[in-house]
Image (cartoon, rainbow, N blue to C red; front, side, top):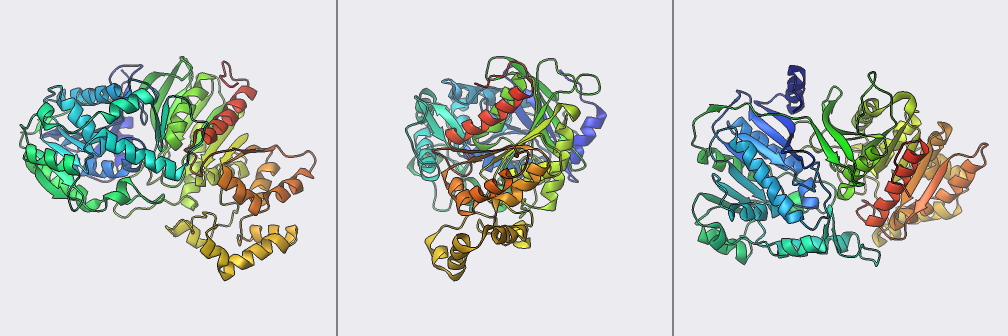
Length: 588
């Protein structure tokens, strides 16, 4: 077990901010099956109870990260030790997500979390399940696990219901094609095997199997839950709570996730009242590193780190035997950017998977959360994190400094606003290679509205809706696109009036950054409509010609959930690793 120094503990406190608790990230269990966890402890070092928070699955798990952090922080402020976990095969925990035994691994992760909290000797842990996390809690309780009070927060009554909802969301947002891997069930946020999906479908809230003893809180949206939820709540004689704004929290219609502060306050109050144990000292073991298997079957090491003055949460993935400078030799590095308010895991956890593949080739990988996203920064009421801001650029510089291997070379990859930050580092001559995935902002002069607004239009989403096309602005734009000489069009892009791909790409060419642009069909249409091909012809007149590759996928979506888009990104990154002379590359 890695010893945690006082300096690292101080970093934990800095990461948690000026509140009356501290947040510590750690690995649980044994390698190579480590479970990632985040522990929230009262500042006094004493607790009068403990709580295990079980997240939902797929996209809901990632969207709810900051809300779950807020709940954990408030409970710790009330004197409770709180543990959040990523199930095996999800988040930053070990394993791939598409194993046939995924459901059993999720439940095993819950057992690991319970055992960790029981070792604190603060009494039987309470359990809070969110959405599909309620099914994990129910499955665990059928095994006779001893727990304290149980909270079912916006529960689904069955895995079949949850899976049907998630499949409908995937088909609506991503679409279907005949390229899906045989036997897999793709969702937004994860991909399940057919076997695991069938087992998930079989999970349900069953009071006969769980038992009706103990104290329960069932927190549902106004109007109550479905028939299965209502029958369960009646059978266990649960306390009831109406919680609002859950759709904006776990099923947001755009990139902006709204944290249901009132619901979190009410659940905190209920658990505070339910915790009746005496205060005891707690000193949990903290482990910052884990040895995990990479997708090719080798071994890599992942380390939890906090970067820069704002203690940005990060995971560094390193090859076997790697020693950081100055003790060892420099290795090439890859830096991963999320988009918008998304977490450091990337689309469908691709950054986790790809980081481990990259490290398996001998390259170091760093993924991180910028301020007010994921695990970074104190969760504030009404918070917003903007992708095209000076703050975001500062965080990009901080992450690049941590990932930069010096003379060995650095590549970066990002989706949408993450691709803009990748290009920013390339413009500043910080990169050898850049992989830009589905950019929509091709200008360096971001408007104040773009930096501060919430709406998708202000954030640069291409306007192709019929209402806009019929408007005066839409008709003028169409006229300029088709009639304006290209040099004048480029000047409009330089001024930030419209989006011109050459404007973003030219500084990368000037810095000799090998740039790959991966475009899903809607983004390829945007690139073409903004006269990207003319910009490439302009750049290619230079001598020597710039290293710019355009990769257009046949299928795919803007956030890069589709497997074909993610495969194109992985191929580009792994090719760079191979070109840098990394050993054992699994690029084909």
